[in-house]
Image 1: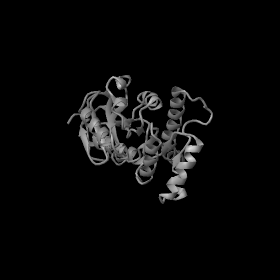
Image 2: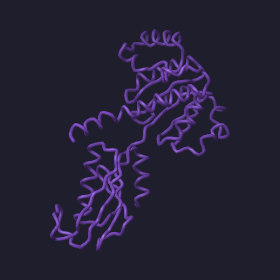
Image 3: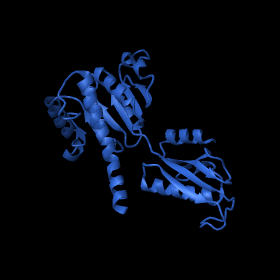
Image 4: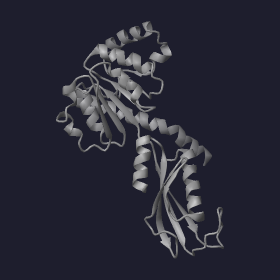
Length: 278
């Protein structure tokens, strides 16, 4: 399997990895500049030359995975019998620098309800590297013509038309997926809130609506056996507090901005831990 297919495999299985590229070569080396390999937690694909060079690169790549590193870094090695080595002598005589680029798992977002706000939100989020799941019980909301605005999406867009029990899609979402509930039907919203609270692997849960709607939902969820701590997992209203406009584009921008803040907050503990160690 070549490196590009390996990157695709890691993306599809939602596994982290590191792309290792021979950046520069001076003198003799087993591979030319541009040679690539992919390092996963347990497997590797391709080669940057074998021997001590490759072993050290793989070792450092897996250290980056263990640290949940996000920034690329350069690693330089001399291929000489006089140079320090850890995994056997490699005396080609040259000097090699490799670039290690972490390949993170893309965030996943499920938008339940692709109405005016849902579609505007999908258009914004589709510009980002994420897995975007669009769920609606109405077939007319998910036609190719209506979703054509997403044709140039960077995100991977997954369309789910579920005419009955759209909440079943929740169990199909990747672990950590962020859920936004904004359907055309308050009864459908209520069922989704209940099901989302019974789906422990989800990330954040957001519900669009007024304070009155949430008061009714909160009472209903409590009557269905959810604890106050469980119910507090649902965020409503969604979006940035300072943006109060009600047109779909303003709501969508507000919700997308708040969600991006959530993405960044998820990585903040790992960054803080690295800074403390350094």
